[in-house]
Amino acid sequence: MDRNLSLITPTGRLTLGNHLGALHRFVAAQDEGHDCFFGLSDLHALTTPQDPAVLRATVREMATLFLAAGLDPSRVTLFRQSQVPAHRELAYLLECTAYTGELNRMIQFKEKGRGVPSTRASLYTYPVLMAADILLYRPSSVPVGDDQRQHVELTRDLAIRFNHTYGSVFVVPEVTLPRVGARVMDLQDPGRKMSKSVDPDTGVIRLLDPPDVVRRKVARAVTDSDTGPSAVRPSPDKPGVTNLLEILGACGGSADGITTYGALKSAVTEAVVATLEPLQKAYAELADDPSYVDSVFAAGSVRCREVTASVLADATAAMGL
Ligand code: AMP
Image 1 (cartoon, rainbow, N blue to C red):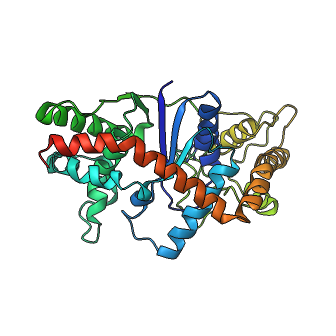
Image 2 (image 1 turned 90 degrees about the horizontal axis):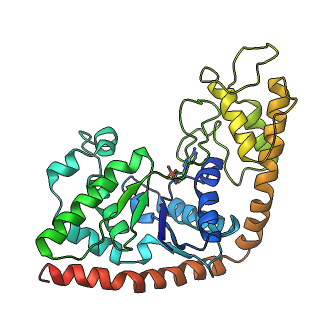
């Protein structure tokens, strides 16, 4: 079975998009018996300013939600990136092989930070840390969406260059397309992805939103002025309605017989609330025992340290240190 590795950065609270597009997939990979590593990339969070207390709370909430969503620590490894020092150690070694010319070409840096004097240096080197995150676990393939594709291409380039210069240490991963999952759009702006880090979050359903908040957000979702008999249908020129139909389907509901936007929104609310209910119930129980959640992630981090130790040691020795 192939090794499966995914990290989520703890900036902002998890959304329905994260659930349907990521956690759901994680649980499916676990159930298929893959050797899975799912982590919180708390070091990546520091590439932009974070209030330490908020970061701590976000990490705890996300860790608890990983378990509440059905990830089973007896079958998968759950960890925090910062608790596995090999990530930052290998990142430094790789920084000593990466070229500034390569990092200058990274589109995310160009869009998010270049030219702004207060941009953190870590935002510039972030793709190298991501390369370390991947190469440490020797996955044969990395499924990524378009936004991360360039970073995984860089990971391949760094691995190939390192192996060529210092001897064969890294497995060069293939870049593959992720399994098609639900892509949830913002309820207020259906032209963009529902994101955990937008504020205000009126178009974002958080996993821990109570039913009345879900109802309010869905009720205010943008649709259009079509009042015809076939208004409720997916179409490229109806992004808001299409998104609501996708959410409804992904949450196990059906639009059969629905002809008005009011009825569609009621059905979406009901389906989303039903999807979130078991997760929120499990969350409430787990949140009563934070030391259990901490112990799960501490044990996962120990396993990561064991699994990655030889890769780090090989890379260190190969460079002459
Ligand atoms: P992000 O929240 O962008 O850090 O992404 C974390 C994970 O959640 C990635 O696997 C994303 O593909 C997934 N994800 C984030 N937002 C959405 C969304 N709106 N719809 C589907 N998947 C999403």
